[in-house]
Length: 288
Image: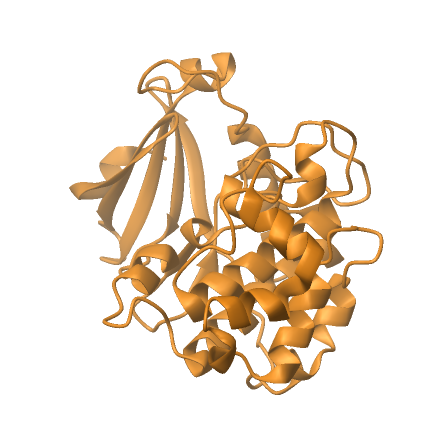
């Protein structure tokens, strides 16, 4: 296996350990994304740009992607097509998603947000992918709109598994994107990654529907979060004149997903059985 099997079209994006290239497979003529990562940078856990210390684990990403493909790949998880090492570089050959990150899709909408119908469609796909991961004992631990890609058929593809962890073990290293991190991740103590994933999903849905984060940080040093803790989501939506965007059952579901106490938070199983999810779309068909 060699990069010579592919014709490089352009660089799609920088990556922590290297870059992502848009390529054409010379055998199939299909467009693919090839993530090229320096093995030296991976070993040192230092970013290519700026030489910063990073937490993302490239070996974990490959392991998780292989694991999730073992018994039939979920259609909303980015598929690892091939992987190989060459000339001091790790290469992951991935599905190409021409519409890019879901975050960009949201903010570039004329209204700056998605319709409730479109939010529901996308959220169903993403939550189904996370549920698939959890059923296989893996928590994502870095859920965000930036870590969901959208292909030409407007299908969401969950990606970036470098911070993934065992669902059934507590975590101590709380890392991720501030907007999406659960409150318990700021407490500098052990936390369960499953409930933290549910919190992040709730924030993702909120941003899709409104076009704005709920708060900068789910921590007491953020005054908006303090207001949320004291008054609840419903009051915040009324305060921001956003309550008309949320049917009652969606507000109720989000309040349960965004329960500050992780022990009382809605579980992934409860989310998948909720009215919002059950009425979203037809059952997902698995590849395999």
